[in-house]
Image (cartoon, rainbow, N blue to C red; front, top):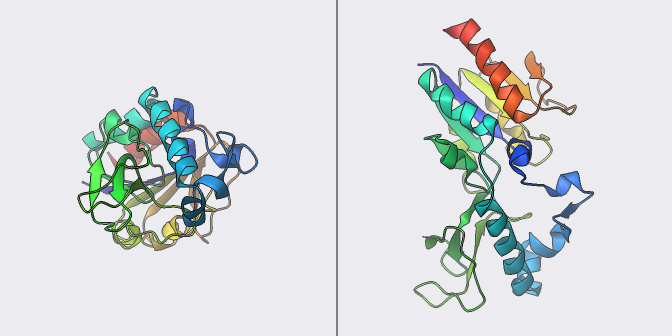
Length: 230
């Protein structure tokens, strides 16, 4: 099977009602991201940070995968599909995709503030001040905040470097280091971009552009890939 690697960004989940700060002038569900999604914000006001992510978790519990998510899961019938997502939701999992790498962490997990390797699955439950790991340290959201390193980046580069087909869906390609992944796609790989907005692609190569939202875009992509490779 040909290896199909898909990088998904916030636009992937927008049809499921998951909003991003880039859609509202630097606000994320009415919050300034510098107040809720940075290490400094956590040091300054951990209660506010927890409240913000608790709200996101409740929102996620009421959201459903859209046709883009289910369309990518269906592509596993024809290709060796690996998803690399910038999103912290679990909609790819719930849609049925089997191989997902979360670059920026997972909303349904918490981790220790003193021992980052201590990670707990919490589902859609809240994290409260006073909730601690086995060592007694406060739990925090298992997400990569702005200004923090991206531990899974090396693995994402390895996966991308082996792609026969590399697809970007719903990503502005402005958030680094994830935006630079396309540079690691092999020279012979087929490149695709699905987004209704204009997105600057940082490579001097031919890119198949589908100017649609994720649901319709994945449907079109599936048809074209089948014509080309099956």
